[in-house]
Length: 102
Image (cartoon, rainbow, N blue to C red; front, side):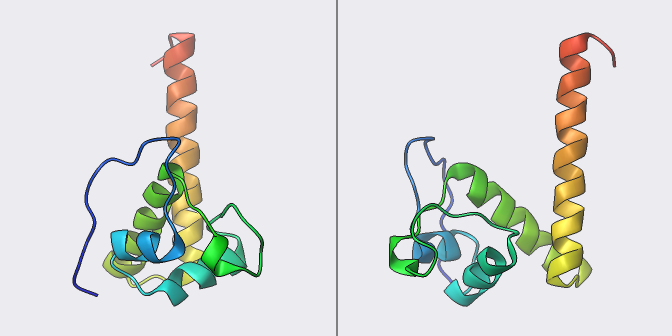
C-alpha cells in the first residue's frame, strides 16, 4: 500500500476497516488479525468486517502496533505487550500530574 492517510480524526467520527488499514499503511488482513487476537477493538458485529468501525483511539493504537512491529521486527504478541505497557505508563504519568506528583 502506498497511500497513507494523515490527519486528525474527530471523536465522533469512525473509520472503516479499509480506512484504518490505509491510515496505518497495512493490508486489511493485518487489522483483522489484530482484532481477532484482541489487540485492536472494533465496534460492530464480530463477523461482519464491512460493518466494523474504529475510533481515533483505535487509529493511534494501530499505528503504534505497526511501528513497534516494523522498527523492532516484533511479532504480534510482543508488539501488543509493548503498546499496552507504554499506554499504562502514559496513564500513570497523567495520574501523577493530576495528583501533583512529578
